[in-house]
Image (cartoon, rainbow, N blue to C red; front, side, top):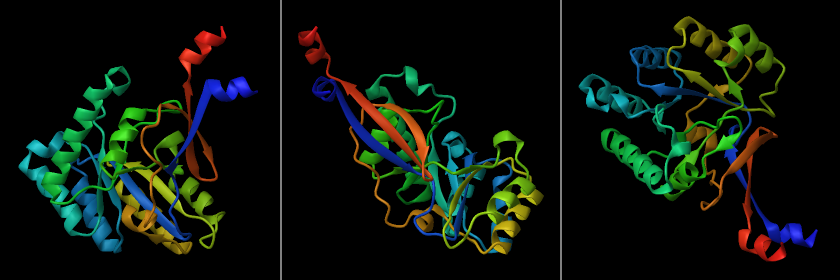
Length: 246
């Protein structure tokens, strides 16, 4: 047992997947902006709700889309980063990852005129990239997760209504992930369902409030969900000690 304690250093890290207070729903839209973003913004204005957009940097070269980044901020929504989907960060060196992510952060900060506080990057098959996580934390950015994925398993508004109606706004909260190609009629239905069941729709700033991420310098590993959170277990082998034991 004592040998195992020396062989492994275990660090627990949590990605938030629920809001800090009950009764809140944070809708998050990933991988925009797209031709549908302004329609989503119009609907949010009509329904008087705030949401979160995790934008990529792909469209920053287009004047039309640069205005979308700015409009989202001006209307009170949270704008965060979605790391470039075409990158395979698992095959990159740490310094290359750090440089690439920092460039993306700087690009979005420049166009929005404010420092982003939130970001998304894939948690693939339970694996979280520690270099990406560390870079976020070093920039005072919270990597978030979710506890309801609307695109997953061909979910419908009826599925969402079942989940929401069996939960309690006095106890529960939700971070919902969607993609920007969501049907606007379906999106409006999701909003109506949440409001009908006593939930308030908020942006990520309101959802997480004063939440503080776990420290950086983690070593990588796998995650598992527990009580609405994503807990990463990071194990660092003490190779030198193993060598001497063997």
